[in-house]
Amino acid sequence: MKLKPLEYWIYKPALKEVILTEDDIKKIVRDTIVTSIQNFAKSSLKKKPKFQILDLLIPKERKIRSIVGGLEGSLGTTLWEPLGKALAAKNGFNVINQDLLCPSNMPAALSNTVESIKEDRNAEGGLYDAKSSHEAIKRVCQNYKTNPIDSFKKPKSGRGVDIWLEKDGINYFFDTKTVQPNLSTLTGCLDQVIGWYSFYYSKHPEGTAIGRIVFPYNPTPEKSFWKGVIGGGKPLEPSEEAWVEDEFWDFCSGYKGTYSIIKEAFHEIRESGELKEVLDELLSDN
Image (cartoon, one colour):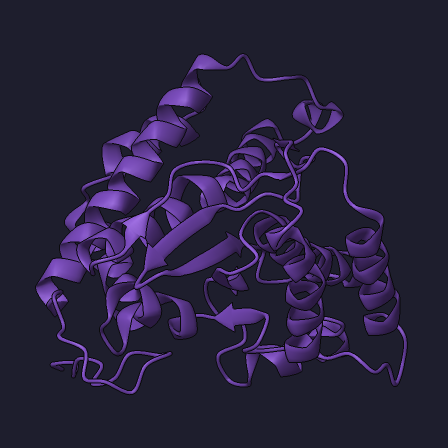
């Protein structure tokens, strides 16, 4: 089935010229998947496996479980992140390959605002939502136009940006996450998005930023992703702070129905046997 290109840009009503075709997208996806699996296999084969007590009972099964679990855990950095960047780069985005820095010493006014938002958002019946949280952080950062912060550093682990894109003066921040998040993960996701806004506007108070947590696919396609997530995803706000599946992929590619192309690419790689030798070696008993 031929997919129709997006007619409108997500944040602008003007017509958007589509650069990528379905074939273009499939080639990017296939190349990224193959490279991801090959690199994972190469790295794994170099490692000496650690002994687990189940090796005495089910050594083959235990090894397969370990490898598959490691591959699943690596998808964020080895597959989803490079795929998002590759699609976006071909669709006219600037890919910013650097860290989003945070103030070395967070000003009290900004720190207090961020903490108040977090506390409020984690409580039932709070006053803040995604939009007002964003606006409050940007508003307090206007003070730094005339009194700029002069020292920045890398944020602590788990608070950075995986994918930083820019187009038409708008900076987009993304981080891909497991598609089966628990409450702790969701709370951390909210902290991350709020943190991105505080980092960015503290240095660029006149700029424009949009941050989203990305869940690359829906593991329960028979129902909405958010109906399958604990608490409906709270305190994270769907669409305004997190994107699922094609909300992200179509944004990057500028093409409607990108996730179906990603799935087709996985099926085609399996049928072609392109990765059979690599996977056989990875999962062998030796």
